[in-house]
Length: 283
Image (cartoon, rainbow, N blue to C red; front, side, top):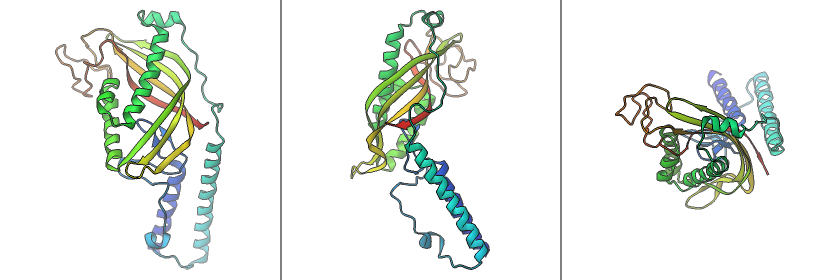
């Protein structure tokens, strides 16, 4: 009896995992797929995987009628929630409720970074975003290292190694920019950080490298994603505070002894230090 209830509990928890976890796509796995699969560093529930309840958890007899009925009710509730969640995602649109960001004025921007060419900066942000996505698709670690802070690069690199081990590839292409705004800036003694709101649409799906079969995502419809991106650059060549954690550092070092961020990249160009997915929908 005890083993049976343990089995019920396992199935219940696995069912919930389909509701609350979704495979992440996009560089850094920031976009969620609608397949109901989930990604983590060790395993994934593939959308094509089949469940055999008898093989995996043993065959279940009617036993106690009340306990079986209770389990079935709970299980059906989970299925209903899953269906409702999928339906809501399928009908979501870019007009869903989320913050509407106000762009900083030219005067506000130039008060912090007098040298910034605003239109050129926005163009570079869009180009950098696409370069990062393409580098993620092509496992181009050299490009990623040039465009990301070390902390973000290390995270991307470890995730790509897992994807590579699984012999899969995350395809992203046909990018188009919907909106871009500079929404916040701040300056420290050594660095300037710029927060950018970006709305962009693109195809995003995962294939098996050998067969080219799609295992996650939809290659026939683009996703529309809203991000907040943070870019950072050094004000001067010698950094006295870590741009990542803020710790004081010695003048002759190029690496933070606390978070191990390297500083040689933070010279005159803005690079990506943070990317947050705000919302997504399908075209």
